[in-house]
Image 1 (cartoon, rainbow, N blue to C red):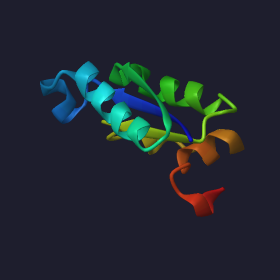
Image 2 (image 1 turned 180 degrees about the horizontal axis):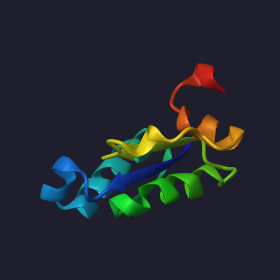
Image 3 (image 1 turned 90 degrees about the horizontal axis):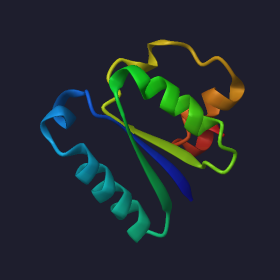
Length: 93
């Protein structure tokens, strides 16, 4: 499974950690299970854009977002984005 792992470095606990190290550790956990995980560390103001960009990659199977408090107040603008928004839920596909 190809996973986009997006971390908002400006969010809560992530502000107090080495977010690059955390992102690599999380990606390593997914990789150990046989997945292709690509970590992306972004500023809070750019997080929604990073999610949209990941959603547009056809090969992306799942998007995992950390530090996303308040990011999903907007309604999905396209079916592709809506699908990515709930990619972790198999019944949403």
